[in-house]
Structures are given as structure tokens and as C-alpha cells.
Length: 284
Length: 284
Figure 1: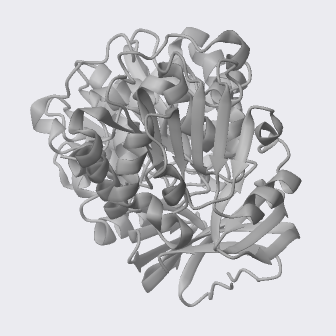
Figure 2: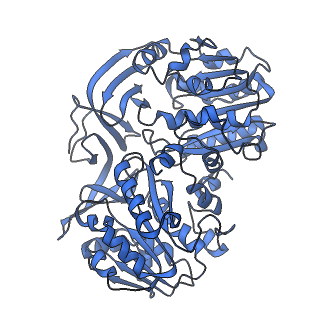
């Protein structure tokens, strides 16, 4: 069976597997200073954002990734006022954070302005939070930006691409150290840390490096299923010296927020931190 | 980007998405009385079984599916002596059940003898349990076979393909009723019930039909991530009038078994039953 270029977009992963989606329209296709940005209209996955040839956002499953990046930490933090999102130019993480009225300011630091602009146009629901008066967008290198702060943020979310191209600096030890320095003492940082099944080495390296920076007892990997990412089984790592994501997880999500969520529940919160046996062994 | 037939196998799902894997060798390709059976050697996914054009087993992720089909029920049952597996001609479910010494007999009822024979040859580890003296293989229509029993089995596992072709009869109300009749009063049945994200209708229908047969309080859907199946987020449904999969889950897996498992742990058991908000709503 051959997939014809004019109808299908295909992400080839490691030259060995591929995920393809049939599109009805190529909505956007430009090369920014950092990467090729493509946006397609598809029947199966809704509107789809491709960065550097990789699926980044699909309307079908973006809610899983964004909710699981944001709500585990927000449920544990009782007073997140100042939030920083690094990467995440689609605005999805910002939109989730905006659901909490106690948040006073959110800075989105995305290196590629064209990602932010194209997502505002083609993903109006996912990027809606960027129009909130509490949001500001800074188009700078996230690694350089975060180096300038000390005990500034209650929550930092690292919503990076894979550790290649513009995302590579967001997997470096120096960056992890700067994130720690920029966090308030009782703050939380959450990193997307790749697939433990299909990107085992990158996952293990990220968690072990984070343990070295934050301390072993302050690093909590957790999982969710994101079908459009290679391997589907995706990891995030929550780092906090003071908060315990299981001990402090609330038994309910505040009612006004709960009705807006499609994936996250307090039970899903606890479940996400239950790692399969092979993942536990990888991290020994 | 086009995927060339001579190097890649592609499963096209609903004519809208596709998952492909590059193969180095086509090991087996025959058409049985029921379906086309293909087996490939691949670098990314190990040896791969394709039935009727669909990924059925890959060495990379079969452990997730087989462990999650078998161990939640086996952990809750304290005395499973007689077990029936319907479908599952690859032998993976049988191999997992064989890890429990208390099991006295396992019958595998697979309609397609060629699936069993080709898997014994090309998946020796996954199908190893079929060589255990407690196993017997019956090559018959599972729906007809199960109609002949009454209160016979402690555990019935329905390891079906999708509800098309030879698997369709395994999603019918009559079949569910026959399964219930064939179970001992304190027995458990587990069904694979498709993806709640990519096969929403089939998933909802299966769970609601099972509720009608077993009673609403006796039906427990649960989830695992199976990357090679469409959508990745895969469901199973455990049915039992007497056992409670959460209340009765043991806090440890028996030590001789635990070391052999790659996915299932007691924490993963509890986590699997925590359904994302959108799945809860689908089942209201």
C-alpha cells in the first residue's frame, strides 16, 4: 500500500515506523527561522500542526497532552500566581492554566513567533488563553530567557519539541539548573520527557538528569497516552522540592474547572504516577 | 513522502490514518479459510503479526496487551483452575495465564488453525504457553464453542480481533450471554473492547451490551496503552458478578510471577480502572 504525497501527511519516526493522516487541505506551509511549519485540515484528527515534520498538535488528542502537562501540578499547587510556559507556542498549556482564577500572570516564552501566530489563526480554541489579559508572549530562546530569573515563578511548564533542532537546549543540564533557580522555593516545574517505549534513552536521560538537579526525591515521572506522538505512551516529569504529587493531590478538581476537562480527573492524576514495571526498571 | 510497498507494511485505519512499519523480511504470507495472515521481521517492532491487514501482535508491545488482558482478572481471582481463551491464537494470553501454578487447565479456542501454527513457529516466546501440558487448543468458532458449557470456567478471556470478519460474532449479545452462562458463579470474563478514542462507537456499544448482560455493577472497563493498535489508548472490560477488581486487588503480585512481568504491577492495576473524563462521559 503506498501513501500518496498529495493526500497524506506522514511522520517517519527513526526511519522505521510512520504515522500518517489523510488531509483534505494544506492550510499553512512556511519555513520560519527555526523550522518548517505545516498545518493541515484532516477528517480523522481535526486541524493538525506539524513542526519540522513531526506531529505537534492535533485537535483530536491535544486535550490529553495539555491537560496532563498542566493539571497535575496545578492541582497540587494551592496558590500558583505567576506561571511560565517555555515552548508550547500553540497556546494549549496557557489555555489550561487560565482556567484557574488565582493565576495572576502567565508568560509564554516560545522561540518561534511564526508558531504562535499560525496557531492563533488556525487553532483558535486551543490558543484561546493567549488572548487573556493575564497572558504575555515573549518570542525568545527559552533557555536564555529563564537564565535571567531567581525565585520568580510558582510554576514552570516546559512544553518542548523533541531534543533535536530548536528543542535541544531544553534538555540540557544548564537549562534544568536555570529552571530550578527561577522557581520559588515551593514551586513546581513540569517537563515533557518523551516516550519511555519508543525513546527510551531520551526518557531515561531526562529523568536521571532532573534527579541530579532537583534531587532524587523531588522528581516524579508520570504518563499519559497521546496517540499522535510516536509510541503513544508519553511521559511528563514533575519536579518539586516541597510538593508531593500523590500525597497532596486533591480528591476533587474545583467544580468550575472540572466540567471543562476532558481527560484529567483526581483518579487519573493518581493513576498517571503508577509506572509500568518496565518503566520502573528503566529508572532504577 | 511515499511509503513503498516493498519495504513498508501499512495498516490504514478508516481510510483516514495509517500506521506503518519498515520490514526487513516478509516471513509468512498465506490466506487461510478466514483471513490473510502476514508475518514480518522489523527492526522497530520485532516480529509482527498482521491479520486481515491489521496489526495484531508485535514483539515490541504485545506484553502490554497480554499482561493487561490476563493479570487484572488473575490477581482478583484467588482460585482460577479452569480457564478458557477465545481468539488469541498467538498464544500470548495463554502464556501469561500459565505463570500461575494454581491453574489446572487452559483451553484456547481459536477459529483459525493457521494463526496458531504460524505463531508457534514465528513467535516462540509469546506462544510458549501453548506447549504447557495444561494447555489444549481447539480450532473452532468461539461463539459456537462457548454455547455448550454451563458454570464451567473460572476465567474466560475474549481476545478477539475487531468486530469485523471472523471477530464479529464475538461482539454479539448472544455471545455475551453464553459467556456468562459458561462462567462459574464467582468467575470473571474479560473482553478486549476496542479504543475509546478511535473506535468510540464500538467501545460504547460493547460496554453497554455487557452491562445489559452482566448487570451494570458487574462491568468494569479499564485501559492500557498499546502503541501498535489504532489510537494507542486501548480498552478491556472485566465482567464479574462477585469480584470487585478494585476492592479485591492484592497489594502485591506473587513474587515468582512479579519478576516475569514487564507492565503489570498492583499500582498499574488500580490505575488502569481510572478512566479519563471523556471516557466516563461516554459511558454515562
